[in-house]
Amino acid sequence: MLDFHTHPLLVRELFEREPDLARIARDVFFIRNHPQPLRTFLLELDVAGLERAVVLPIDARTSRGCQICSNELIAELCRMSDRFVGFASVDPHRKSAAKDLEQAVKKLKLRGLKLSPPTQEFLPNDRKAYPIYEAAQALKIPVLFHAGMSWEPKAKCSFGQPLLLEDVAFDFPEMNLVIAHLGWPWVLESVMLALKYPNVYLDTSCLYFDNPQDFLAFALTRQVPLSAVEKSLRHKLVFGSNYPRVEIKNMAAAVRSLGLSQECLELIFAGNGRKLLGEAG
Amino acid sequence: MKIHLAQLEIQTTQDKQLLDITPEVERVVKESKVQQGMVYVLTLHTSSGILVTEGLDCLAKDVLKHLEAAAPDQGDYFHNRYLDIDGRVAFNAGAHLQSILTGYNAFFPVDQGKIIKGSRQRIFFAEFDGPLCRTYCVQVMGEGK
Image 1 (cartoon, each protein chain N blue to C red):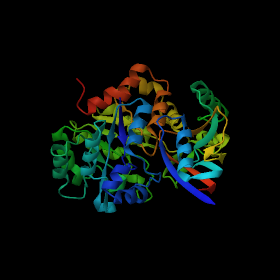
Image 2 (image 1 turned 120 degrees about the vertical axis):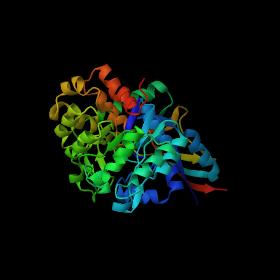
Image 3 (image 1 turned 90 degrees about the horizontal axis):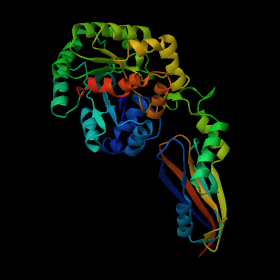
Image 4 (image 1 turned 180 degrees about the horizontal axis):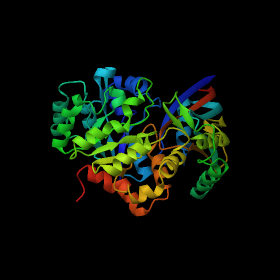
């Protein structure tokens, strides 16, 4: 059981290693809760009934002058607990981006790529980013894209339009990509891409008003009928919480409350994520 | 008059949980060397509480179950909205209400350096939105050696 979408931005142990991370988390990523010991993160997983979490950085050196967790810090976190699966991030504006990704995967043993077009201020179908996708495809790693609304005050949501990912899915058919947050509010567009393209997945980390249970029910039973998830998207949806913007326990409970079959839930919480990480047998 | 303050961290491990902090409070009273006075225990969080009850697992379950029934976690709350002070959607009004029902403090007299309390009374830190690393205060005030 796996949480495919977490940000290790309130972990005290990481603040001790990288003091500026506290400011970056507060002022750039815009998460304002108090830092917690690493143990709280692991207990969150326990309470949610999950074993592991994908931990995500964002390399925003050109757009924001900082890394919202560096690849090195992610690798260090993964050394602190084998319950973490580390992803890399690279700055699409840097010429070395593709090479940086290759190094992060080969040297730091990171297992996927996180890109956030609204934070990094790039259009995901810009040909400038294609060398990154070529590298990801060659490395056989999944790419998780922030899509849809962003809470960060300086981030323009238009960079997160899921339809911008169609060119990427089309041009890199061997590269699996995950549209985070269901691409909300463009849920139908995101679902369309996941239905059409075998290499497009969605994650559940979606909360913009109300509470996780009511919001997810709105997105996955009213914006999209639940039967579509059960029948057509069961192999294309992975569980993600977006912790610490949402507690893992609350998003997990929300997904479990939707009314999906046990078989479908096992795919969302385990099978699909394992497949994306190349672990499925 | 002596005034002794201790800020203590406690790691909760469950979503909702009562943790017996009586030994920690007794230790702070002893450290304070206050002989005659008062001890106050206060949580510093609005989704947790301090309560005094008997130290029985069955009772702890009842307390948590009925607090949740009185203030359900899932409810039609105005608090369910984006809060820019946190950078996230707030949806834990139930935990806040459970905290209000519980209260955020407890106090006891101190006599001859010991807390005066009933033989069945235990002091609990009540978690309503865990797991989290929490902080509570124990302040001892009075005449001492």
